[in-house]
Image (tube, rainbow, N blue to C red; front, side, top):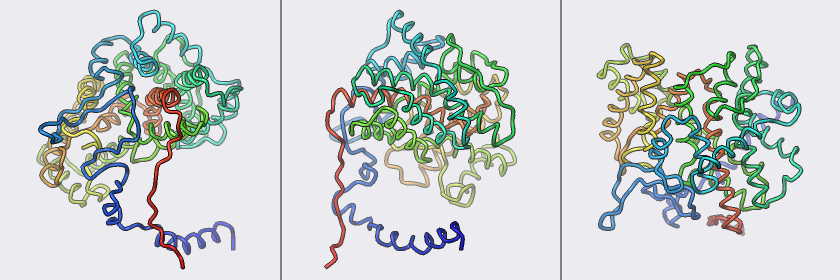
Length: 444
């Protein structure tokens, strides 16, 4: 019997044993007052720390009651939509927001020019790193490729274990600068070696923004329009931080609190983000939209779209899970402020790309799904589209392959992770050590 056959047989035999012993009845959670997923029955998170980096408002207090309200997302005292309005037509919104998250205030003109220069200075990888690390063992899972690259970069850092704040800041800035390269080069390696497509590696341009460089490095001819870069820049800003209570940011802080190095903390955050319950939501939206286009004869007919959405909700269509993806959020109630900001830019890009029919389909689903879900399900806090309802559509219009959807999320979120790592080092000083209540039965 060969290795694979032997291991498969052993795994099949033994799996029921640990499943039987590891299954904890739901009633024990409520009996002991333990919240699954650190969320109570109303979705409110268990407090595990304090932060001054960002916050989310999804409810307001009235007469001692939590009342759902339009969502708000704040970065260092600014609402995210106000930041975007403030930047206007400037090309470097992501970089300005990265400075804000890292240092606690917006930069003046001189500080911003210096920060751009520092990022440009760090947009390089060690000699032969692309060849020896990124192009070896390429994978369709670019998040795994990036994580391997991040951990390998630690081998090139003589001060990897130095936890002084100025050293950690340098490490974070280096990672913010090279993340677009790790993502795009990882994709090109996969596309060449696994898909037999042409290979091209473009070096970043020090005069371009993160969004512009990402598009330039991705495309064979390096070309992009201002609108394309602007919309991608907005997407990066909207995804770069989210209140501190998300899974990958919490992972960053947990690993940081143990005294581990920057590369290990960010590598752990990457492993968290790649989970489909966290960073892969827009992929499910795109799969659902493809399914709708395949089964609805007229995607701009509201009645036909509504009828198919009813089938999805009743588990008769798509993946038979009864979910309309992109609708609702674990935290927000009446609206996701990121979606509200993003939608106008999505509309502008869809007009430029002649995708009006697809945009109308999204608008129909947004309206019909909200009503259907509210009617069919008991939703205590309301339901509305979230930012991932549109982000996959945007990336698709930009010609970004789906293998890069979650990596682009990481390119945005590395700034938030870095800010939280620094805040954890400055202000905590204790290892995060959660408690689990044991319900183990003693053997006599």
